[in-house]
Image 1 (cartoon, rainbow, N blue to C red):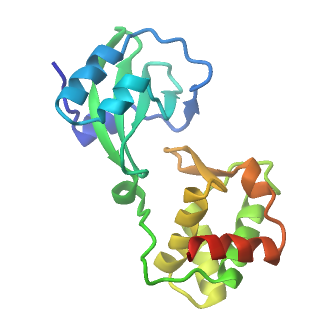
Image 2: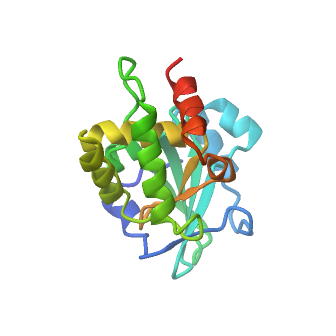
Length: 204
């Protein structure tokens, strides 16, 4: 039997820092019978169960809970399996919608990305990350800075961030606090010509 967690139950398991343990976590609980039930109820795709797909695993600082993120057909939505590490059981699941939680939106079809705005955003992200040596904090403030300097709205600039995430130049590495990093692919974007190619691909 599966159990849908309330928002309060899910968020109560967060600590100030959530650690990405995707590559190192030793599974104390077999989540896949639970995921199979979710697939039967069409909460997750059957393909996710069949292939054993896991997007990320985050552990809170107290080592009491793991949040296992399963991908869905929507790149901004995940089904999170909450594993209680003390009792070695599954507490339940939660639908995490990043668009609702953090204001991430899909790029509108009639909006063409402009290289000068994208280049300005890249400069801001490089500065915020100290040339890729630190995670990017306060993403909302970064978007606002770019919006003010390019005479655009924050929501408009957010579409550029979404495109960078979509193309794999930027990735979210923590949910709480909300942190982003520039990927190895993103580190290769250095010139306005690189940005022009990126925008051209987005505008197709």
